Length: 307
Image 1 (cartoon, rainbow, N blue to C red):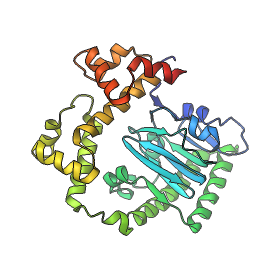
Image 2: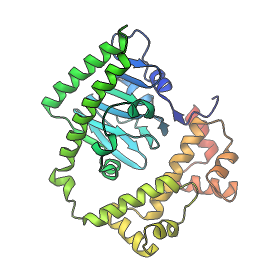
Image 3: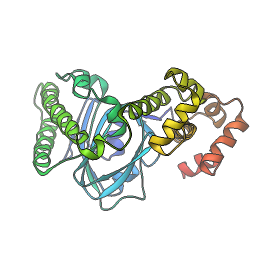
């Protein structure tokens, strides 16, 4: 491996999905946008280790089913399901879960999104819920419309037309509006609207996960998160367990393990450097933590990941 590879850019993602210049399907623009169709082993191999993507990504399943981990949650993606990914999250596709899969992947950089003429934050103003519910089901009408979008954007990407980037940004604005409305409709379903847990409890849990995602490398003690949420550690621990079935400490540890795996696979950092980056007091404590959570040492994981 050369260089830190744990944050995957759109050009790298393009290469990983096997898309080539002049391909008959899909297209890309100057490292800021790509759209392509991926099937078979390509679908599960290109992200079979935890990684971060330096892009906003929509993955739309056309056929089959497979599992995707985003941060510390596993989601089942099946036919006519779309899953969203935002920069900063950790993603992994389960390589052993593929069932004759095919999907369309659309990725756009933050710079590209900022140039899209739409209020992205207003469109997805329930962003904490997007963290918890990144999947939406596409009905037949939506499937037809998305197919038309794919064909149009692919054709423009591969064309020699001047101003095609601006054209795709304009098309992207209408597509984001469509997806935002589909996602809001999905959240209005009874199964997602009321899970038997009070809305305030769910909100605190989502805030806890957001805080952990932002601070897990520096703060591994539940007391830090309880203080930030103006709760006692005991109450926060009980609340998190009620909502998720896992303790707060288990959630924190899950984020740490994902980051450790990510760095072991995609960076040139030594195991010692990774341990210190994750703020472990000593390398033996990092080894002990990693092995107790994964069943193998960091060195064994790195060897297996590279093999």
